[in-house]
Amino acid sequence: MATQSSSPVNFPIAYSGTDSIVRITERLCVLEAVAFKEACQSILGANPRPKRLLLDFDRTVFMDSSGVGALVGVYKLVSGQEVELVLQNVRPPVMSVLALTSLDRVLTVELAPEAPETRDQGRPSRRDQNRPPETHPSVRSWVKRAMDIAGSLVGLGITAILFVPIAIAIRIDSPGPILFSQTRCGWMGRRFRLWKFRSMVVDAEARRHEVKNEAEGAIFKNSNDPRITSVGRFLRRTSLDELPQFWNVLKGEMSLVGTRPPTQDEVDRYEVPSWQRLDVRPGMTGEWQVNGRSTVKNFEDIIQMDLKYQNSWSLRYDLQLIFRTIAVVFNKNSGAM
Image 1 (cartoon, rainbow, N blue to C red):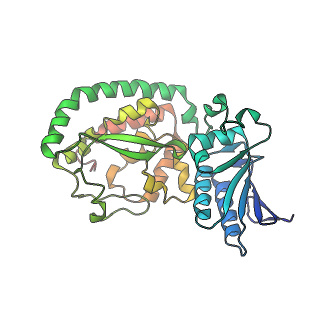
Image 2 (image 1 turned 60 degrees about the vertical axis):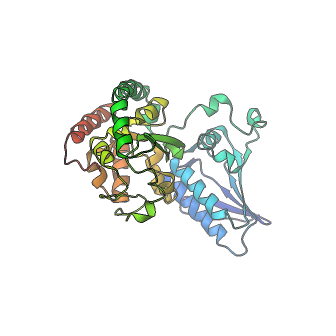
Image 3 (image 1 turned 120 degrees about the vertical axis):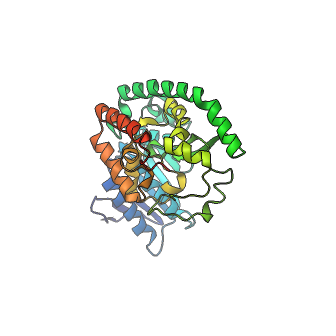
C-alpha cells in the first residue's frame, strides 16, 4: 500500500487495490476543507478511477460548515461516476454533525469501533447528538438564545395584532395564500422552512425565469421585480413581510441577528469557503440589513458582511444591529425592495 501527500494541508492518500483512502485531518475547517476537496478531485480525475473512495475520519474530532460543504461537494463529484463514497471510522463529534445536517441519510457511514452504543442505530447517542459543534461562540451563548426567545415572543405578539389587517390587504390585492414559505439553509446548512407574509403573485416561483437577475454570484435580485404585488412592495419596504419569521426564531432555526438565510439553490452553487457564513444561525437582521439591504447585489459583498458579523460578534453588537435595523426600517430610502 503506497502513500503520498497531495495537498499543502497534508491529506495522505493511500491505495489498496481499487480503493483510494484519504485520511482526514483532526479538524476539518475551511483551509483543510478546501485542500480535502482538491485531493478528492485529484483522485477522481486520475486514470484509472478508483471504484471506492474511502474517507478515514479516525483522527477527526471537529468539523464546521466548511467541512460539511466539502463533503457535499465530494458527494456531488462521485455521483454519476460509478465511484462508491464511504466514510470510515466516524466518531461521535463528526457523527453528530452528519445527523444534524441529515448527511447520515445520504452518505454511507461506518462508525469507529469504540462507539458500540451507536452501532445498532447508525446514529450517535442522544447525549452526543444533542451536543452541537462549537462553530462560533454565538451558537453556544445562552444569553443570545434568551434574547431570541424574549424578542420572538414580543414579535409574535405584534404579528398577532397586525395579522388580520395585513391578511385582508394581501387577499384583496392578490388572491391566494396569506403566508409564503420557502426552504432555507440555516446553521451548518441544516434545512428549515422559513415563513413570510406573501409579497409576490402566487406563481412567482414558476415565473422566476422571466425576471432578469441583477445580482452577481449565488443570489437572485431584481429592483423592479414585476412579480411583487402592490401590497407586497409596502410590506417589503416596511419589513412587515418578515414578521412571521419570529416563529422561526422561537423554534431556534433562526436568531434575531445573524447572517442572511440562503436558499437551497444558492447553497448548491457555493464553493467551500462560502460555507463559512453558515457557522452561525441565520438572522432576521444582520450586516446586510443595515448596510444597503436589497441594494446589495454582489454575493461576495454579502459574504464579507457575514464574515464581518462573525468576527465582530458580541451581545452588545447584536443590540447595536437591532437598533440600527429599526432606524433603517423607518428610513424610506433604505432600499428594502
